[in-house]
Image 1: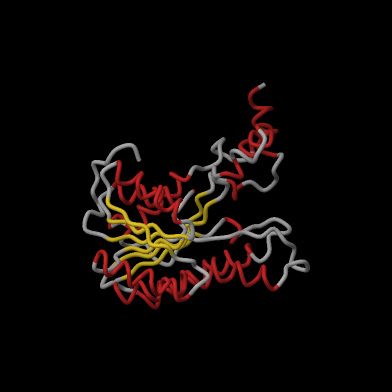
Image 2: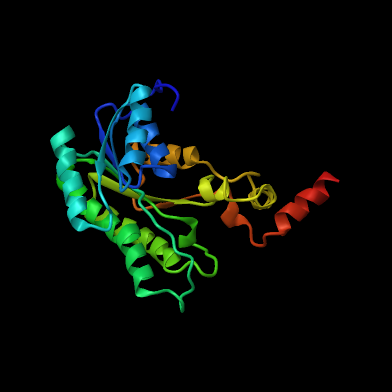
Length: 266
């Protein structure tokens, strides 16, 4: 966010973004701040959180960092209490905190199960419960994954939890409506550390080739979707799960698309 956006859709809103000290969450926070919102950055790393706050303030935005571990129900309660003390309430909640394990169903441990469920699932429920107590109207956006629809081996329990988030969103939409809308974003491959600095150029090129749009996504792609779903432009959208995956889920067989394109270009 190099400069303030002309649009100020959220100039009277307070937005809490969990897992916002880096990556997708940080970009979501920046975009809301760029459109006038007061933003609460939260996560476990104070240094990373303060860095995001400083970047927002340098661009003219309003943000604070409140440290909270999403595995701690007490931390979550304190987060919303501190947000109320700072800004008077909450208008928009973005549930984005997540950790990922790469274990098979028969290899996953109780610790794997507990860590993923507490961070990626239970925290969404608890944050939602606390947020709606402070909302008269508003929006909740839950960040899930394309693993909710199709998955890969050895990604349990991450994939199971992501599917569960879609169900939680539907339940929240029914129970929190009509004045609070709840939706899910299901991102696909996004350019974060493991797809940029931790992936070879050859692997990155191959990955991009199996996306109909010819690239993987960016944190900005997810962030603009989040601001849309939280805005009045999406007033008739609730209980839905929106894939933001560059068409990846439309591809049945990985080698089909690049082979087709190569033949077409000959």
